[in-house]
Amino acid sequence: MLSQELGRTLIIANPAAHSGRGEGAALFATRFFSSFRSVTSSCEVRLTEAPGDGLQMAASAREYDSVIALGGDGVIHEVVNGLMSIPNESRPRLGVIPMGSGNDFARTIAMTRNDPERSISELLQGEERAIDLGKVNDVYFAQTLSFGVDAAIALDTIERRANDTRQKGSALFVTSGLKMVSRGLSGWPYRAWIDGEEIEGINLVFAIQNGPTYGGGFRICPAAVPNDGLLDLCYNTTRPHIPHALALFGLIRVGRHTRSRRLILRQVRHVEIEFPGEEKPPCQVDGECLEANRYVIDVVSHVLNVLVPSSCTW
Image (cartoon, rainbow, N blue to C red):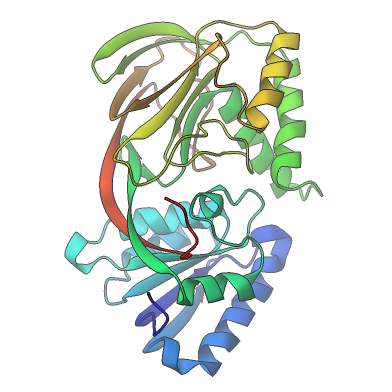
């Protein structure tokens, strides 16, 4: 148990997270750790101002015992990649105060979302566990990597949040999904090697998960857990017509698509995928855009220590 203290602690906070509520959460965290000095030997709060700040801050945090990412999946993604640039023997453990729209990594580690008081309590009374990460080319991901229509949906939600949409979480993903699916499903030709097995197809859905959800709770790989030494893959085998695609989209939301003959779900350690066409498919990694024609994906087992609530079931 970590009920005693977090040691030397750095909080990396995105003040713009959750429509600006991240700033208030950062202030609350500052007041809390200033008032209860027994839970840390020191505590510093740094606010991000631009993309990439979280990565740089985490990369320079080797003198800390704990680094806490305050914000959504975007700042967590940056902090994870920054921490992974630190040698294992000096790498701080990761904590999360979830303040985002999707909060999918927080769902995976069973943290209370958008309630900084409760999530801080869970950090202080929680446990330290080693988790796997995915790695695509030179980028780590804590939760999700996908190509095709689902990636286009994820990237559309990012654009809409930037334009200050009032929708959040899965509702935002649903409306973006309806828009993208209704535009048609031509797909992108690809060739892939999945643990040495070669396949070819037309990419609509190709999601590689470290945790079960993306898009604010869509259970694309419902059996995925982040500490089993494997990644979970879901990909389409046929191109459904729009009505079938919309029905499948609804099933994915609650994880009831796993018996569909149009999809394959499996666990993997190593995937290579290339897209020979001139048009690159949309690709997102933890909600961030990634562009390439060829991707090499691996699981990196038990590589990052994370603070999770004691109620976490994996």
